[in-house]
Image: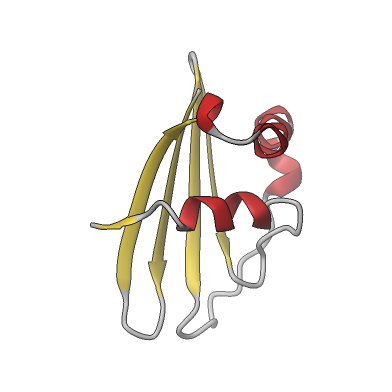
Length: 95
């Protein structure tokens, strides 16, 4: 399954991005991806549009014909997704 992560915003707005096959993730993070893909609506939260200098995190998952896109900001990022985001941030490149 393909996973694309992008982050934009911050004090000096920038966009960073990475792509990875979920089989290349550690097992514990593969389980997070599987949970998100199984129930994406449970991860959709209202975002704070007044958040200044914060980041927006976008996850795009594709497994066959099923596609899931989720966007979080720093305040709406679910606790169980944070380790996945931290792992992906270490692999990003400026766009």
